[in-house]
Length: 562
Figure (cartoon, one colour):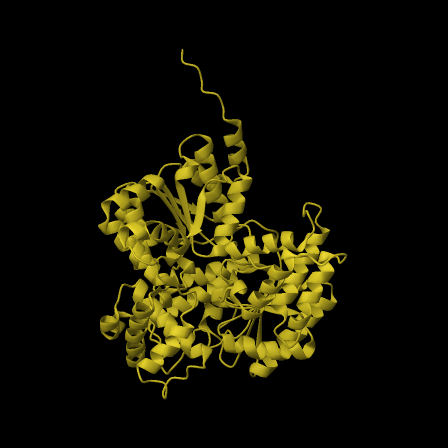
């Protein structure tokens, strides 16, 4: 009679923290695995526990695992969770960070010469490219919105593997039309690439292109990388671009040890080249793949979940959810005559919430465009409501934040004798606490106060504070502070709040109509998914407002009567 194997106590403890669906993910230790996970279903918990469980039972070597995320914040969160589960050696990185690390390591032997400088922002080179293309009289180089739109177009083209000469012809196959003149974009794109070559610089898209080409063409490099990483987890797989998929293919080779996680209903970056087709066709490429669906929603009330499910059902967009939380109020829909009255109503409601004792950090206002948030900011300043704007811009790349931390870095080398570190930090911050844009510095001061009260924060010095902040820089994990969050719907993805105001749910904004273009079916579907993302950020309360003609999405969500 054969003896039963000993139970791995640690492995069982890992599984005990999961529900049945999440447990199924954790038990699927060998690939290929495809996890369809709706909003708030605990996908990060499921995949980190899968990695930890597989490591605990010996199914995976944690030093040979690469977990890919799409934001530095998400990568930092994953590393923190994996450390807590006893697997600190797992590499959890953004796809760009993973590619850059490999490219820099092999650059001397593969390419030779000086490594190109990495552009963290395209703005400077785009301004020069506009001048070189002779378009300085027709394109406003001082407009952040215009430069951002041009940068978005170039990024879309590059991740779609479209060069400057093919850009115009490929636009015919694209649903979303550019917000800027396409012929001008093609000219700027050509000049931009020329300037980069001249200055020996590369952008983040080049990092992916160069790393992919290196792996495809250099057998020795490919074999070394494939030996280093044997098991892959890819989060937010619905946001993969063709270029990113090509890189993943190069990493994976002929193996099938890959677990992908995504939600087709949250595909909102098509304008940047993302496509959910790699997620939805995963079983075509891997016929033996195990498909697991996470349907238990732990974020929102049943009332919010019901409305979100109704929206999904109207277009068969994705995975419907079963709410696990206590009941709450039905989402409230408010109609206004114009933008000013809508903003006044939102400001009044938020003021009432704060007076009732609701912590400001539990509140968020989400909008389709930055212009809406700009108008709201002015009203909130007038009402003296505390807020911070969360944008797709990295918090630690903001000029005021960088300049402040530069001062902290200098002061930390030789601390001032006899002065408390927190008082010294406040003194350093004073020149930055003027004007309207003070939320960044205020957040860093709030973090300092929290650390000063934390008994585990030792020694209590500027240098220790700087180390904490630098860890957050690496993780793109900005400090939280007791203020209301303002964010675009795109910037809100992956986040959640107790109470959410979703403004501008009217025709013209949701779906968004710009430049006189008629929205086709694919563009409307993307806008509907964006509305879904906004709805599912709310945990307890959801207030949706519109002016003029209501968005058709409201009726599809069952929130309006016809």
